[in-house]
Length: 141
Image 1 (cartoon, rainbow, N blue to C red):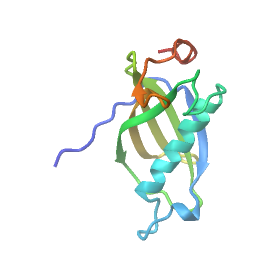
Image 2 (image 1 turned 120 degrees about the vertical axis):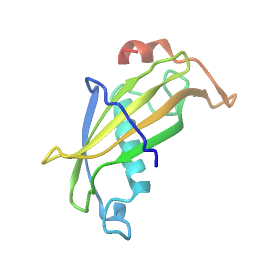
Image 3 (image 1 turned 30 degrees about the vertical axis):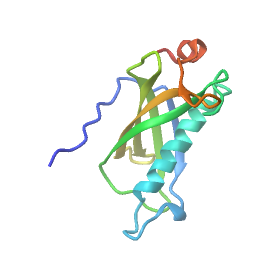
């Protein structure tokens, strides 16, 4: 069976520690895949927010996810703290790929890696739009 392969970048542009909450635990008594996506969303929002933006307003344009792939490597349980690092790669006029790495904050052991396709979106016209120049300037794309 083919597995998702996600290449990690040589450098990370953002890192945040996020605790695994009791509501993130599934019936297998570990971090659920749906909750892991919420943790990635939290990390992405904090990365964007540090520049004074939101996903709905980056220089008057929005940002939406068009796809995501996750490769789990180990379990995380209630009380663990995940260090989530991210970096944008593969820039285009409309967007970029965002790579994530989640590790146990204490041991550094890898929990999962992910990548999401992110594109810019005009919520007023409901159409894709070009990446704002200031976004690319600030984030090095």
